[in-house]
Image (tube, rainbow, N blue to C red):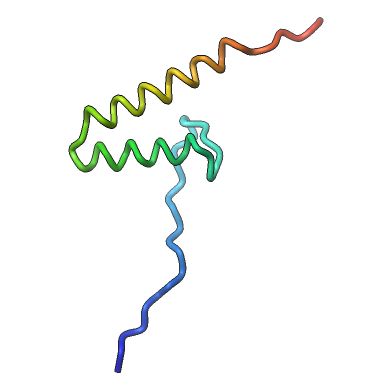
Length: 69
């Protein structure tokens, strides 16, 4: 008798709130990719990916709009 397989998709573990990455966003995917690279021992690739992501985020923060008082 063949084994039954569970074809339901695995639920992903939530990221820590400090990352502020919405579920399903590009930022979330890149954070998860960097984590996999670190785990695989590809530390320089992971660090480069994270640095690019963080530079992009830092750029967003500078462009905040001032509100009128």
